Image (cartoon, rainbow, N blue to C red; front, side, top):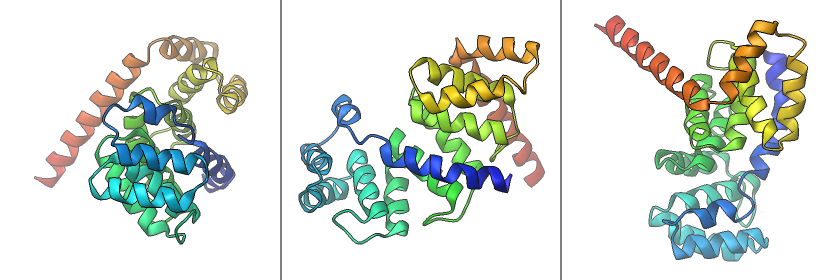
Length: 223
């Protein structure tokens, strides 16, 4: 388990640093404020002082995209002093507003224990929320989570299904991991995983039922 986590650190960091660095996700957000738009454009052009000015205003106004981009800046020390705790705080704000990038970033920090205590179960939950928004980065990382049982029970079928789905969208990292899994799966498991990758809604519904049952068991134990 520890070895797997250490092996993935570079992968996760690379993925985190590459998530939403284009403006595509921002343009798709019709609720994004003008200041957040300007800040993201400045960020994209590496004008970090200008980005910090606009993003800080938008973040103070509660814009989740601004929380996310400003969090990235604090994480990497771009235009502001590096501050992992502040990055985690901003990602928390973004994640709380169902911003997929914020959910992924906070999930990664929770796995790594950067700026916030490690919490694998919460990381898995956040990445599931982002994955359900059809975010391919979240789906790829969630595949790893199920492959190695990080905060969840190991499940090769779910891992393969997610990687197979993302690989079909052109993700090379997912394709490589999916292909390695072929050596570990039975023919029956493979067929189940391939069927599941064709309809992820079935997977999300199953995970929701499992989560609901888990919460019921927790409440019963408390009483």
